Image 1 (cartoon, rainbow, N blue to C red):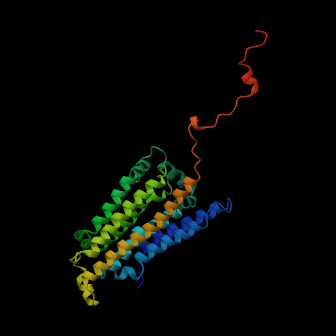
Image 2 (tube, one colour):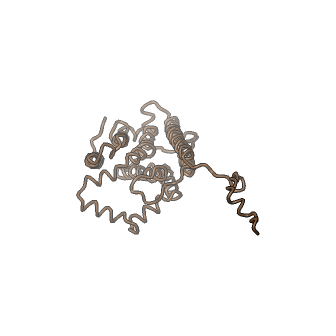
Image 3 (cartoon, rainbow, N blue to C red):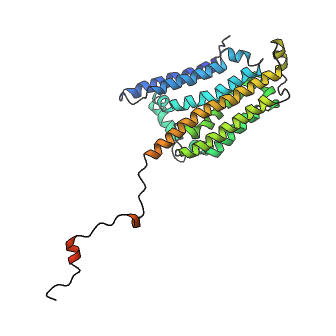
Length: 294
């Protein structure tokens, strides 16, 4: 069954309304001010969060590990890049009064504390480390079981996973606010391999574990005639397979952008010694000859 959760619907609705109003205001400046694909991507990100937290997926996540992994995949690997590619923050700010926009601008001005903190967090090594640690720590049996027993802690788990998903994708996409220069495409490829690698490794360990790591699922799996170990293996496969597919698509995009960037580079000129020597004008040559009157 679908769930009605105002604490989820209200923030998502505010994001959708503010972004829509902002894009509408920006579109008055010209037809090209707002690319049409941005609202589509934002709708995709909102749909991914709704599917993870409000759909029947959420209703069965307490009983099946594999369904719970679908939630985590939606919150970490799918919703964040869709939100960030839509880049709704500038549009959302344009929906707010001018005084609020100016206050937000001061928070992100050079030298401001918020800007310096976010710049430090989005440094690629820091972003990778924080996002990887959060993902792995929440899947430790103790933390995972505690979240299953406490609804508030479970909500905190999902909130953390979503925001570290945003943080982990930040160096690859670089949306607004741009607090640092864009990472070179070649370095983005390296970052992507490291990020997808640790996600796939976690899924592989879950899918090949010889023991049930999360005992809370044993009763639910037995009631459905399932093996808890098979359910755990299915959840691990969902994680590493999704990581592989998303990573492959992202890698193809990055390689395309990298090759396109190289095609736009100016040709490399050879050293001066290899350049052809142009003949000197006749007047210049005769100026070195002695005059017949000398």
